[in-house]
Length: 79
Image (cartoon, rainbow, N blue to C red; front, side, top):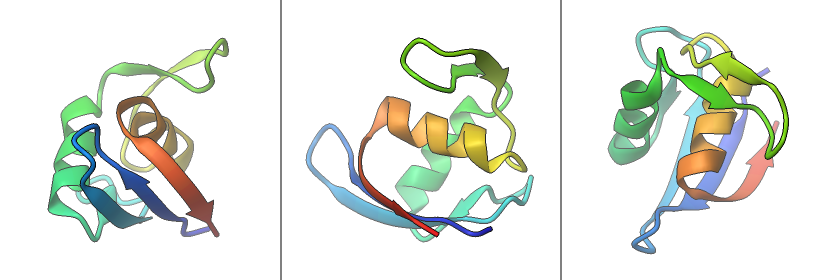
């Protein structure tokens, strides 16, 4: 399933991306958000505030969403 994520960076800039489940381009739409996700691919990321950790990969939409949630203020996630 492709998700559309809308959010804001800590400086207030808004973004909107689509999660692609593609290892080469995990998200499309915002160059800055794409760079953020690509920066954290290969690192462990907590899936929830207190939940399990998982290695972030571009093909795993759950970890891509977790990266965006951890490093930005996600406003909405729509299927």
